[in-house]
Length: 490
Image (cartoon, rainbow, N blue to C red):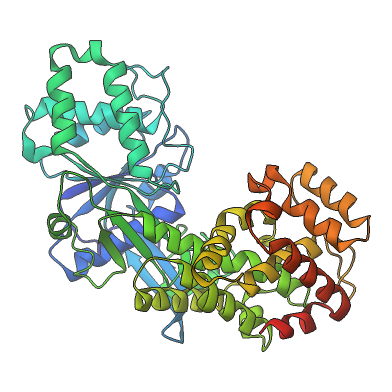
């Protein structure tokens, strides 16, 4: 078996136009895979320079393979099982700014550089007032980026055409807005370092750099430990950087204030390459769509499935009873609470069900049920309220899901003897234990719905009819068992 590098495998050459902060599995399986496809199918013709955002990372591993690696995509696409392997070759090199600071700062002196992309984890977009302009480099990601932006401003004398398009991929709602705020804070913090350039640099950043908020969506399990030997034999290379992900991908890029959608599409032609990349006026409705139609069903299907004797998400989707429950919650209830075109919502919901039904991933329902109450508060409760407002009645499936969560937190054993082991904050666990000790479902319903530490309000008072229906479903589950109880609401 051959080593994988540019001497043993072909590697395309393209101008370095993208700086990428982050060398982890997600960016390599998502962003770099997208750029590879754009290079193959359009005239994007760009390579990526990877920058290690923290002192210890894996750029040496990447450089050891000349930044070549394979992406293994698995899942269902249009009803068909997919298990593909693609060798990605769009990364030109990888740098550690802590040991190669001069090369790192010199990146922005290259006139072709146009994009900055990042995934430095949710904690990465943060302002640290201890960072100094003279640090080599600044410890925070926004600090490093501000250093680069000023170097570019100085190198090209504030040329408007040399601004950068910045697209963070951190899993934070409105990530680009937060990043932009951090950069402004660093510009102000380092005002004295910039001297007479302060005002003109700030104006250049404001007018000629384009910071986008984005939403990313692809499940990336990472390195395929179980299948790595089989994959290496299949590709005939000793690739130690294979990254595994699901087939589905979505990237929503919110246009920046100072650039049109059409101009951004021309510069970043992902849609032209047939990729599921949407450049939109706002990220917000797509964020709501994902949380509502993917995370929302996940949260309620898990206790319903588990207490019905089902352990895997895929099996829940294919179950005659629980599968119908998932469909009801997703299509008949949650979908009706969103403000995007219905055909677009139906397509997304159908894609979600395909993802749930991934034949290659055994997704345990119990792994979803950690902190179920806070998840229900953010993912499902908004849908309960909007549905009630629009339809004049409570959504039975979503309320039943809440009753299922409450029942799950009772503990004990399933009908098949499997232990029920809920996990949440100690104060929530203690509250549920005391409520269930009363053996009074009215008190249980009222007590849970009154917990303002969970809901930030008393749901007994703010959602008419909810207490009565939750009690009714708690009694129904107790009397009939979960599976038979589900049948009564379908």
